[in-house]
Every structure is written in C-alpha cells, then in structure tokens.
Length: 362
Ligand code: ADP
Ligand code: MG
Image (cartoon, rainbow, N blue to C red; front, side):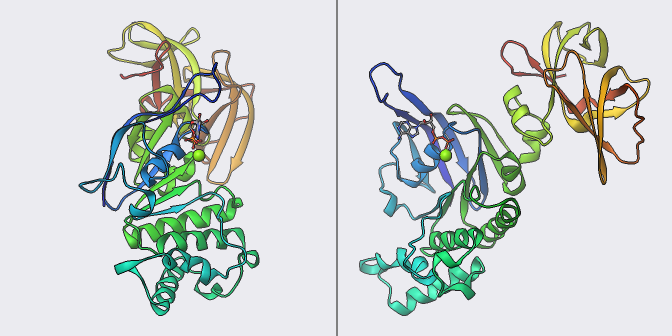
C-alpha cells in the first residue's frame, strides 16, 4: 500500500499571546512506495512525530491530503486507517500477559471483523512468532527485557495485519547492543511482511542502516529524499552533509579563485566551472589521502588505530571543527610528526555557498 502525502502542513497555534505559532510540518509532499521502509530523519523538534501522527490519523493536518493507495484518508479516524503504531515507550499493559497484550487490539473488533477467542489466540501467536517471542506468551511485561517488551509492542501493532506500520523512535529506550539487534529484527519483519513502513529516528546511522529511502527534515521542512547512500554521497546542502555520517564530515572555510579551491592560502583542489566565491567546504573522513606532498597540511593531534582503519585527528586554522578526522586504510603508516599532509578525493569534497548553504557542484 503506497502512502501519498500531498502538501502536508501542520501548524500549532501559539500557546500564549506573544509567541508565534509553530509550523511543525511545512508543505511536505512525498509518495512512500508500496512495501518499502522509509526512514524519517532529523534533529529533535523537526516535525518527525507530527508527520507520523498525521499519517496515523492521531493528528489532523492543517493543510494537505493523505492517500493510502488511491483512497483519500485525510478525514478518516486513526481506528479506521488500518495502521499499526509503535512508540518509543512500549506502553504495554503491566497486569496482562504477553498473549493478552498482543491480543488486546483484536478484542475491540466488531461486526464482520469480530473474531472468536481461538482466532484471536491464533493471530496473536502468529504475530509473536514473527517477532520471536512466542516462548514468552505467558509472562508479564515486568518479566521481560526492554528489547523483548519492544517486540511485544511490535507484535501488538502487527496483529491487526495493518496496511501501514508506523514506528516512532522505537529503539530509543534500548541499550546499544539491543538497539542494533532490534533494528535488524525490524528490517527482517518488514521485509517478510512487505508492510509499507515509516520509521522515525533522530539517529542517522539507524536510519541509514535499515531504510530503503530516507527523508531528512529540518524545522518542518524536508531537505532531501533518497536512498541512504545517495543522500550521503550527494547532499543538497550543508545541513544534510553534516547530519549524515560517522565520524561527521569535516568543515572548512574556503574560497574559489580561478577554478581552484583554496583552504587558507593553499590551492587544494581543481573545481572546474565554479565561479570565484567564498565557500564552506565539507570533506568526508574517507576523502583524505595521505600524501607527504599533498596540498592540505594539518597539525597532527593523534592517531587512533581501529583495526582495519586508522583514524587521524588533526587541526587546521581554517577548519570550522576543532578536530579534523580522517579515516585511512591501516596499511598506510602515519608517521608521528608535527604535521600530516593530504591530497583530497574530489568526489568526497563538497562545496556550499557561504550565504545559502546550498551545494555548489563542480
Ligand atoms: P520531532 O518528533 O521531530 O522531535 P515533533 O513533530 O514532535 O518533532 O515537533 C515538531 C514541532 O512542533 C516542535 O517545535 C514541537 O514543539 C511542536 N509541537 C509538537 N506537538 C505540539 C503540540 N501538540 N502543540 C504545540 N506544538 C507542538
Ligand atoms: Mg518525536
């Protein structure tokens, strides 16, 4: 089931007279393709949850329309949209067993949808098997780990066989190892069921690792939409470039003169077709090549060996970050000297307008 968002806008009125209204989501248009997992990504407060709640029917858009397939669901209530919702805090009923928790959404089905007790138990078991908690059906939530509780919440969202699965920061309450494991589980379940899924997170690595496509938002406005690698390799603006990647992109002050990029007084790269201007330069950590004769010389601060790779920390007067981090193959020996010199991989260097922060391509 594809989801079509058409000029979706949500404005919250100001809470007191003086403050301005909040445009939580600003003119968001996008079609979530059928059967795909979309990562909705951005810093806290950028409008991710509001977007998700509008898709679910929990909040009504101020403007715009939502379609599930060809059906306009904009004015349909949450119960009638056939969505499964999972939140950050699992919100399980503490006095009920896992089985009862998963079955709960089925108890309220009426009319033609009404199920017998056996049918409900059967559906609950199927959902539990999918998230691999079918051995825990008789436990209470307090007898489960955080990861297991979140699986129960996912099973509960799946038990009504929703057309759309919506997950709002579902892994935030889990520790690092469980987070990793559970996100792979979510990906597996999504692939197995083929349910069109929107996954909200502020964690770029999480979004990048499980999404077919990511949507990067900032202050209610969509910045860029694309396959994770595509967006990483080809960011449209400085915000997106900085938001994606660990270690983050290294940012410098620079200028273009005579189709050459200067950092400080040194020409570091040919940038054909770019007019003379002041720029912000972003260099991905993997964009540095150790080269004693390379044009970009930095003060060496430390060398961290991380098995396969070496992370070199350095500094430069024109850097807008305290630590420049480059990642290079461990086969290359970094000499412990005062300075380290690099040449640059052109496709890992991005230029942005100083004024608009939009990408300048070369
Ligand atoms: P995110 O999920 O990306 O952290 P939200 O969608 O929750 O962001 O919020 C987006 C913006 O809308 C924020 O500025 C937030 O304060 C505001 N907001 C969210 N819900 C309400 C509400 N019910 N009333 C007023 N403002 C809200
Ligand atoms: Mg949120």
